[in-house]
Image 1 (cartoon, one colour):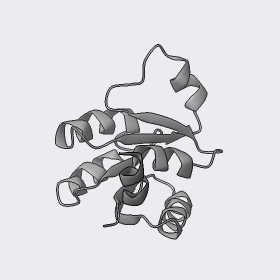
Image 2 (tube, one colour):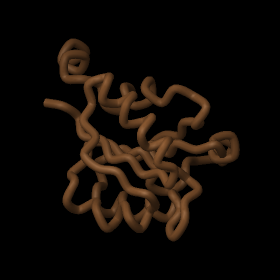
Image 3 (cartoon, rainbow, N blue to C red):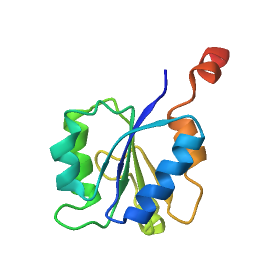
Image 4 (cartoon, helix red, strand yellow):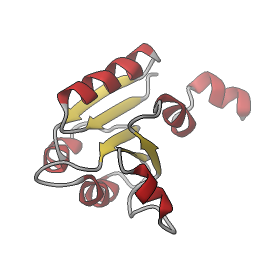
Length: 126
């Protein structure tokens, strides 16, 4: 069964790039949102296994959205994909709701694989 990923970013090009990378690696994109508020509007119908969230977005930023999404999906990892990763990582702890941070200039696939290993890899390591 494919892992379902929800992508939240205000830039359509970034969403398309993430979608292409995930789908070519065997993940299913269950939804896309253009900001945090739009993500909350869609979230209850999606049942994602992972949420990839931008930090800087209109109407509701990624940190506020992460807190709200965490209450809906307490066991779903939230990957913050941001150009401001250095600032976020320099804090003593990750912001509430955030599981992992990856810089937009980095390949996010290794972090996705860490958070959602495919079933073959998970069975081998069990």
